[in-house]
Image (tube, rainbow, N blue to C red; front, top):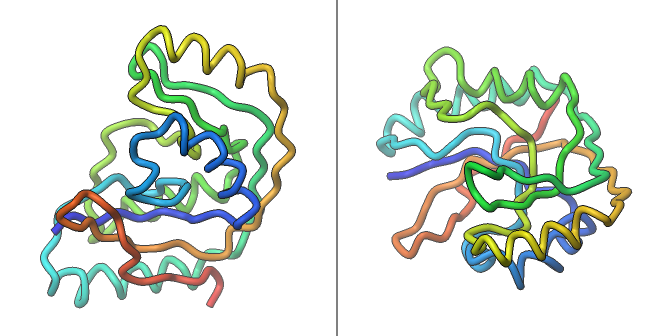
Length: 170
């Protein structure tokens, strides 16, 4: 089965992201707004229960809650026409990402870690230019507290569901 690890921000941040996602993100119905901490990986149920969950509990208990800030949008062009809310760089979120790729956890980093919340993807070049041009002029003042992360699993229809939540510092 396919698993992933993400942070779901507060309702305020999700509402802001969804105001764009419902128009510009075809994955809108598959998963709420999130920050991907670990790209999807394959694992067996017994591996999840006996190895990965205990490791995630250890990581979460050894990580203190931290704040994130979002002030603008950015994009992954020219690689893809994806537009996202840019999560400002903090040592805490990068350290957490690193911990989730060490030890027994699969080191499946395909791309450099860029903390973000996708708000538009799979846009044509024309759509991308128009949407990014408009959104890049907006300023955001979003602050959020990260105090947990979720282990997710993917359903047959492509949707993601929470398998378990791990509270930081507990």
